[in-house]
Length: 248
Image 1 (cartoon, helix red, strand yellow):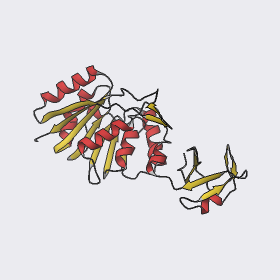
Image 2 (image 1 turned 45 degrees about the horizontal axis):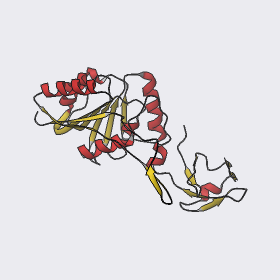
Image 3 (image 1 turned 90 degrees about the vertical axis):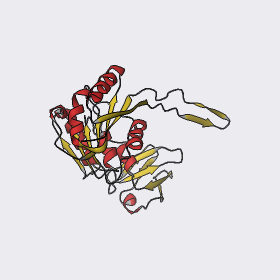
Image 4 (image 1 turned 60 degrees about the horizontal axis):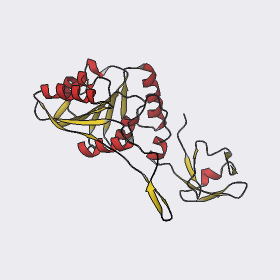
């Protein structure tokens, strides 16, 4: 999968993703001749052969992220934002991500963290994640095709995220990998998973429970004076449980 080279956007918000700027690019509004996009700077207007004006710009991280391949269901951005906000992940953070799946969380964290090491047991998921890491050209993400239940190689990390069927089985390994003051974040869709994870975390004397939250997103539409919530909303996706390591 080739990286995205240019984004085109119409005045109605329709987006087009260009991977090869040296060939003709075809759209529903006609085509743009080869070579034109290679010379276009961000914000420049380009015309199709039918006269339709589109605006070109360089893709940002989120533009490319929105085009990654998906294998299993990914963690929604609303939940990713909560993970970052509650743990303070930043440019100096080292993160272990367990249960890579398609790599969505690892990619988002890799965009802001110093380093992300992500563990995925399934070969098919790991293959998709590896392709997505290459697609976004993330050099600070290391993918390990192994089970986190068997242990975590890294030590003194800032945050461990768990998106696993049985996150309670990874509590001790995660605790050993963390530095004092670091966080474990477990993402689970059901309450029994949360209960079992919390019970396991509380058995570890070095950990304290911070909280469990659920993030609900409700988008609104504006059409002149008609203002209302969208009929289709992002409701429950999963529960986020945060625990913190307080001593070695």
